[in-house]
Image 1 (cartoon, rainbow, N blue to C red):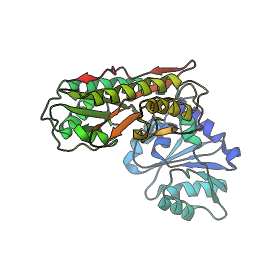
Image 2: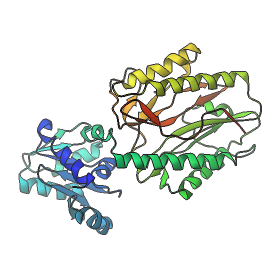
Image 3: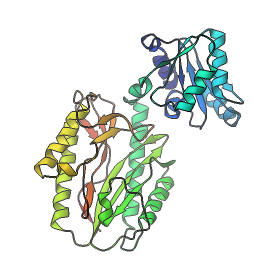
Image 4: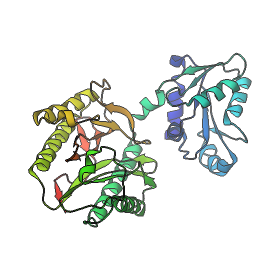
Length: 362
């Protein structure tokens, strides 16, 4: 049995607790998790005994060869709404309670599903059953994330050598994404964040035509998607003379980040890790300038469960891939964020990101 088949079996085995006869999976990330399919239009129907996969004629060859021929699911190539073809199977097999992905289904999709249901059938919320299973990565997933992390760090190293005064934020972002792809990435795992000078105080700054000047901070938040799996890293560098205030901010964030990493272990909660970073920043009187959570899970999506936020109750388990990324942002001065991709292990954690964290002066 392949890893994809096992995942489908495991999810189907949860149907009794969902009080459902079957499960309609429509989220692109969840479809890829269960089948390996990366196309833009697909639907899966999981029953206790079989799995059905629906897509349109654009993906007929791909789906037939990669999903049908390997026994992952029975493939249905459909002209028109996929939900119509799925409803025909529901009716033929007399499936009445249909679990669906309530956490990710748009209202238009929900109403379409309702319209297509056979008489007497109803939708049942499945919550985040698949997303919770995705939190624990398999050995093959960890290997792919590790390669994604490696490519991401290599791209950063290439780009940093080319940073100089006068270069635009947009130029740096473009070079990052070019280097990622040259090293084997499919694409960035999110819109690359590049901010210079006072704009580093914007946690999610979009690159602009602002040109990097002397004696300025540079913040880069970047991630590569490789084999469908994401990496995530943030580093800051500085051109020219560094003020004592910026040095103190960097020291505070680095200590907070290391404290967060030290708190990562099986049995700890997301809230425990978040508190570890905030307690350090409080010592530096910078906790009020930390305006986001300490981290998040990643995998097929850049933001996955768990969320490492204030009082988050999620218990960390070995096999989770997460980020640790405290930051402080002072308007008119700048911002510092340091982020690594981290793997929860049986005894603690492994920092997967190889890029050094010393304060780089260019």
